[in-house]
Image (cartoon, rainbow, N blue to C red; front, side, top):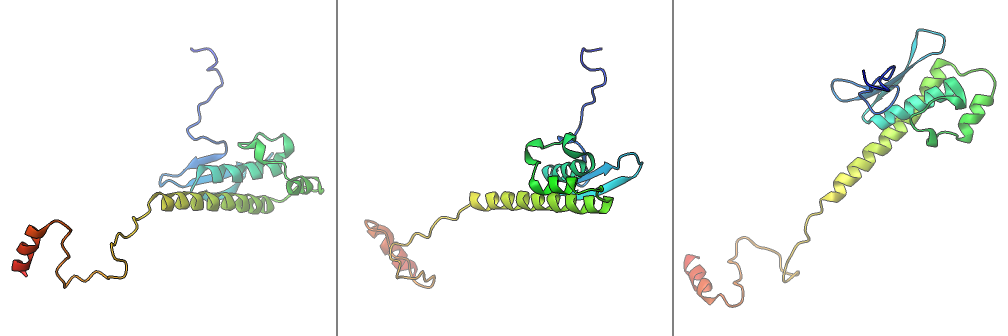
Length: 158
């Protein structure tokens, strides 16, 4: 047995609280404290969005001491005020907040990906010698300078 392997479990996905469905969508869910039930946090197209939804839920359930996937992104005044405002939030309220955050991140991820994909291909600008002339496929093409032999050949074909 290797040193350090006792009690260590290797995770397939990069973040805690999420898993990938067979068809490629990422889902997030969390167990309620002291209960066997789970809170469904939604289905997302990116692992990061699902992990952010999980982080939101675990923060509201366990407070600032929760172990998060992105600890540097939590700590907004909004979240702290909700935690300090008395009774715990219901499972439905936690689900709604987590889905809101996850959906926002998912939308940002997909628009960023789509924008990067669209900017990677730019069609070349049209190259016309005379921009006033429109291309007419019914007319014989103009020969390039210095190609008199080709010009005579083309006139015989037309």
